[in-house]
Image (cartoon, rainbow, N blue to C red; front, side, top):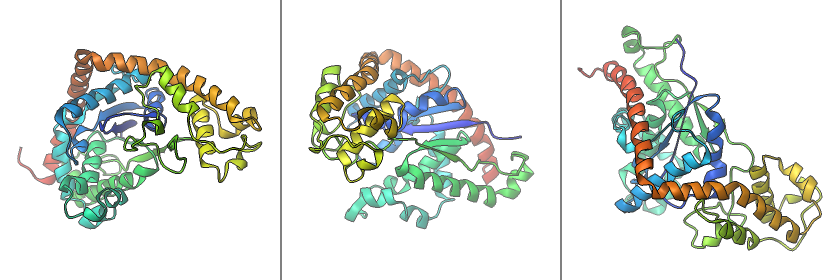
Length: 346
């Protein structure tokens, strides 16, 4: 018996999905439907590690689900659901809280970054966030997770938790005959590393990651922006006075130029070298309109469909309910075995 070739990934509904979310994650999810069983979650339980306005959370949850569908994820082929409808996530997370070590959590750089000097006053949930993330993945025995640089450490922790659970309960797994050919119960999940231009930077400052928290709306392209808004933001994007370099190596030390070339490359499914071969030596008055046209052609139709779906809450909620029902069936099958493995009476 071997693990099913399965992908799990989730996006937190924190509002204002932008180009970085699309190129770094959502767009990459679509072709995986052809090669893997895919489960795509809206991780609303993760969102409340910091306080959320309930109405805003519901709206943002539907927005992420709408983005999945508008980008081309088929809710009949893949499973699309929001985490809080499948309470086995919380159940397995508690068990993993008892497997993981405090030292592992304290080493998580994202916790350090988000907590800053206020670590004594942040929620316990923020510290335990990676344990819930491990539960999200392993509840479905996912073999692969698409990750960017900022999530690789959390996936490494997921692998550590899986290995420790498999080792701690090896005798119980064997006694109940619920292991794989190698005796493991949970897979050691592998990363699917993101390709080019997955780290999209601010349109106002090429040294900073594109983020919804930036006070300037001009720093990011929202997936709900209309065609006119997309074009205007690109044409106003910060650049330097030099034309595009003749070689890709010439982008070094030019963060804004590198970012815009990277965005063009990602949207057109090309390499930066191919983009430079076409536009090298040309000025921004040529390149920016071309990038704006490309962005509008790719993002415009998706934005229109997202806006339609966000307004059609009946359809979105039905997709989430159907996905949650299918997810619960898989999750409960895992948890039936987990409860017995750890010694719970059932």
